[in-house]
Image (cartoon, rainbow, N blue to C red; front, side):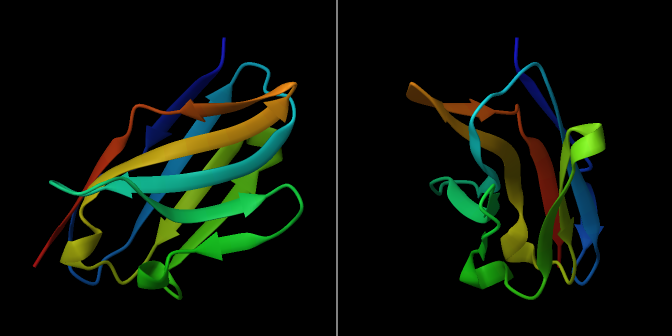
Length: 118
């Protein structure tokens, strides 16, 4: 059974940093993309950062230059380093893995809360 477990969220002041981790367990075949999404109160979930197994990396315009997505294959972990945090970065951050073997599958973690105080 596949599980994604996020950690690293918390309360931080404007300008601070946090590093989110997403540890995934279970067998996932045909991974195409690993990503972080976030959902602010009253807003739809949005893609924050992602990378594909083909090597391309993508960031939302609002986080470019401040956030970095990375992975440690040996630990089955995806990270999101967040620097220069702003109050508008507040939200629940979700880890997502997209795969395709015969059909597309999306796996999600339970989310971790990030709150940036002004």
